[in-house]
Amino acid sequence: MAKIDFDLISDTKSLRAWCKKLETMVEAYDKLVVVERQAQMELKSRISECASRIRAIKDVMVVLESSPMGGVGPDGPTLDELHAYVRDTGQNWADDACYHTAQTAWRLIEQLVQEKPNLR
Image (tube, rainbow, N blue to C red; front, side):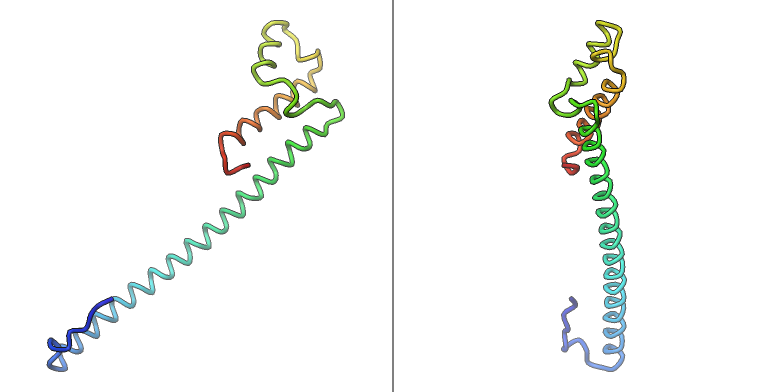
């Protein structure tokens, strides 16, 4: 904030110049306030959008874990185990393409969540 030096304001012309400078500073401050409010609204919108995506990702993981074939999720084989099994046998895990696909999807989503801590 500008400090008023009353000794320098000895005439009307100086007072008007100082007031004009003060008006310019107030206008600049007002513009900054508007920009800050817009940025805060944009941030809130992005946080809300991100939160809904996080919920959707977690919902997908629950759906996969709840699949009727069972065993999909954290207790199932890792991606390395799934890939090694295919490489070694030429078949899907337990010869079940549906399970293999569901467990692979679950592990890929798990990796995403681990790489992005804000998704936890």
